[in-house]
Image (tube, rainbow, N blue to C red):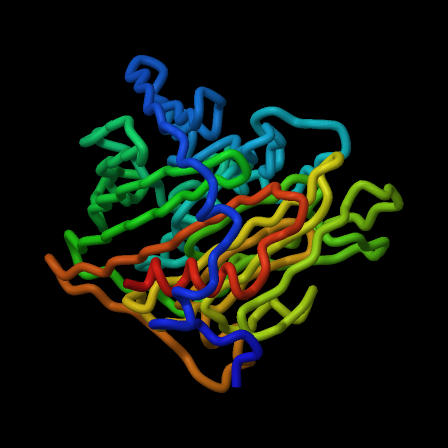
Length: 345
């Protein structure tokens, strides 16, 4: 049984978060088609930028900031900062893709893959910004093609972002629909689907080196550190803490820690209509914070398996809410439960 239950009805209505009392700030959406980016400002302050250059293998939001301006995303590889780990160069900002679709690896593709091996990797190519609207809620929508190296389209992507915020909080709602052009098999693998690479401060402290192997046998070593900068920790809706969050299922997961003088928390909330709800959490202490509903075989040690197959013209939709808070106290479970309840409706 879950330690923290998602509330509904009167019980949820009785819980009022500090954010609910704050005045909603105006969101400005600024397109720059020439540079292939869209800037998002909340209350006149930079929040994040949607980036979709042809030189990179997928679109993403980067950097992502708290209301006070602290960047919760790692700087490397686009803008390295002191102390930044330099592992996994494909981890940039907040992104959405998958490790194995028809045998193509969309997740691990980056500039670090040799040209001779690129044919084993998939690309996500943004086609068009279809909506960019400012207001109390900022709207950004785009279309993209999931392709092989030759440009053959496997999936059509339609994504809609909704951005909002107040003096202490920022919210990103992402709704992505994938429609198969040809039959698309999402094999059961660990790396997917919504990924966020956290700033050094939000990593979990460790002095141990760790090794991780991807689906092609490539080993990445992540060095343990002796600095006192990392202060992060995880907590899930089921009460799993720290490393125990990895491979567990839950309605939500949050990471929290100190960034300068601020207490910062970042929560990712799953949606009841998503495939294989509630999601598995691919939450690593070194700073990868991901929700992967399709990695069941890995996360259950082979006890069960989940594959998703989309026939031509079939679709699957994935909805997530990301809440970034830098109040004097991190988001409490009852506050996130209320947000999950609202989002689920």
